[in-house]
Image 1: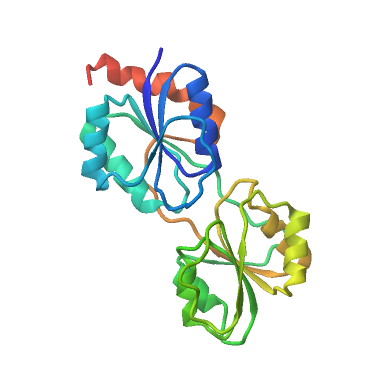
Image 2: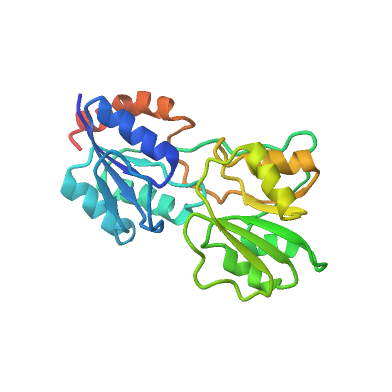
Length: 254
């Protein structure tokens, strides 16, 4: 049975899921926040930009006759996820999340886990260090509070404005990143500590494995709290849930 599905995306898995569901006959719209200047081609119809909070998204769900809302945003997009859960309730539309499992420390890892980016700044300490910031351009401004460090900053799009610190190197790159490449990068820049979000997945795990191999410290920013809604860990698991999620709503005449 064909369903009209809205996917809140921006992740590799969202793109894969959209293609999977479209290939099986569903009508799929993929929504992107519009923060990336040159997003990867998605292969399905794309809507870019916000909805105007939960009320705006709820209105969109009603107006388009959406049968299912899928939250496949980044694990740190807490506000979008909260708005999605609220909008689904308001519109009476089923919702499910695609949430990749987070990384877990293994033997040899030297993690310091913190709750926020501000906490990560503090965790670097007062002594100057050579820091690899693998956070995305929205989060790096907080590190202006610790200008004594050298920063290697990697992002998909340019960091503008540049950080108001005396010693920073900027690198534009899009994953996936292999462990061997990450190790070479860390060695080339003399990095002694890595700051990362716990994004999960294989595409960006290379830096974590490389840091472990080199005996480097890692400051890991924990994931924020997300709404408690039905979820799946993989694209295949979620794709198999679609009919089960939508049919009960249809039977109720929603």
